[in-house]
Image 1 (tube, helix red, strand yellow):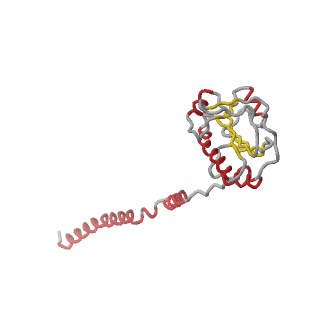
Image 2 (tube, helix red, strand yellow):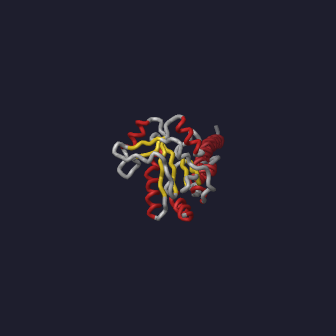
Image 3 (cartoon, rainbow, N blue to C red):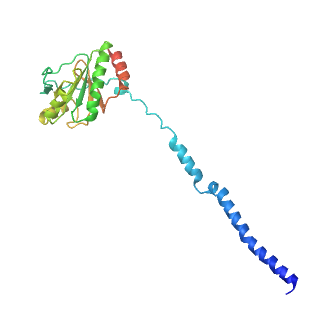
Length: 225
């Protein structure tokens, strides 16, 4: 074979070896530099993360009793029978409830966790409002079915806690009293009534009372006094 032909074949072989090598380098560079920036959905994922990190808008503060007292409603059925229970070493409440100033009627039960959590809060409201010169008291009315559970709870309370309560026995006594007060015979607990000195209902509140409710209640009652 001639020398020229041999050289031509050698150069052709070298050219074939170089093409795949160049293609591989180009592909790897494309993947490492361009790949992450061009992945579909990348911008959407970042946007979703930023959106989820944004703080939720604060809940608007509720105005207890709508910020004002309702017109006089029905009177509480004070002449209807109502039970009482007290811790072993605590004094019993009067057999017939009476009203002077404002009375906050709290329907509760020893099995109701939110009810038990708000009892110290309501007693604190009573103490602070009286210190402001407002005639105010809390009247607790238990809707417990289990008398033993109720008495055990009262007995476990500290000296300044809830040691005695009115108690509506399950059945006709409870239904008659609640319906007379304009409350459902099987109400969700806790539930509250604000009653004036005439024993007339002026406000209804469903659900637990919070610390933030005190300012509104104080403003409402001091304006009315």
